[in-house]
Image (tube, rainbow, N blue to C red; front, side):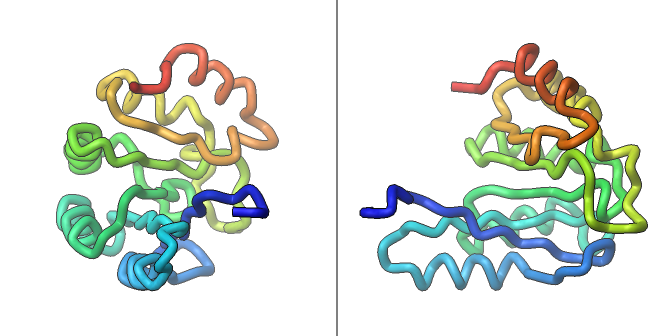
Length: 156
């Protein structure tokens, strides 16, 4: 493209726990309408709304090609065994996952899940999983994000 943008990610974010409610179905339909294939649908998994495996399967069936999770905003442990099983499936299917890190606009967020080091056990347990630490822990946890980058190489 003349603007230098080749691809863009459309993100789902399903509450409760956020001010937004953009469903996996919505982002999949939105991206699908783009005939140039510039838009890539990234779904969400919120264990407070649905079982992680069922949410994953449904989103993949809709055409979602990656995920972004908001553990702090949605107040869930990203290392829960039900999620670890889904991460293993993502790794096997080469589906990338983003985690929101750093500060959040949610006033009732669980800040225990903002630090990038919270995601180290996931990267250690499933080294082939493509993990993106969104916002690099800004502003308070950038050194922790840098540590993760140094200790968990990007899967090939």
